Image (cartoon, rainbow, N blue to C red; front, side, top):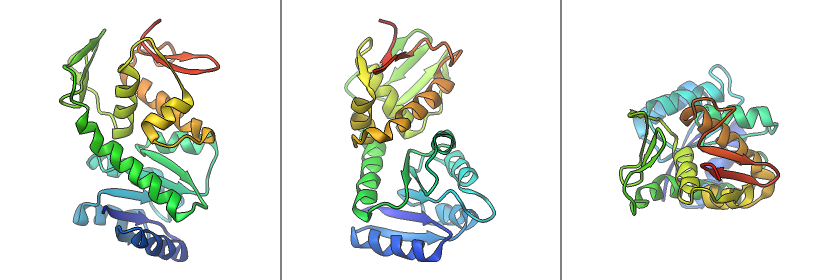
Length: 228
């Protein structure tokens, strides 16, 4: 089972999450602030971080950015804030998934397991040699992406999204298909996750994200890697 770090300032919520996730078989560490959370990330090396946004002092966005800057630990944002701006900001800060409170413990557990599978399953995608797509090289064996020879720093979710889309250049993927393949859940209401992660991916691999060469929008349906 996974070692989790829950960063949540509300003591009753924090204790409830700790108890529920332990019942799911996980080892759970907790912190009440972003600063304490960063210390525990360094000391305990958790497998995944469940992070509240509205924290005293350092907020969840900044905490997320600092965790991401230090490594590739998967991060799930867990918050009562559900507007598009917050979802986009959370993913841009480096989160791998975004879950809105209240959430059933078994649903949160499923999302945790899905993110962990993505982080580890990335290493199973070793069937192909490095692929050249214009100035972009995708090395599935090495799990690396370079652009004009320079490494592109992608989160595990961004990498999984790119690998999924680039596996079949020219093929259109619906948002629901992408949700199922990358996030491993198919609630269409979460399609904003797809759009936000696409924006984030474009900002890293495209010369001009507003006029993408690699990840194309197919209006009214979804996305396609490469031009048709």
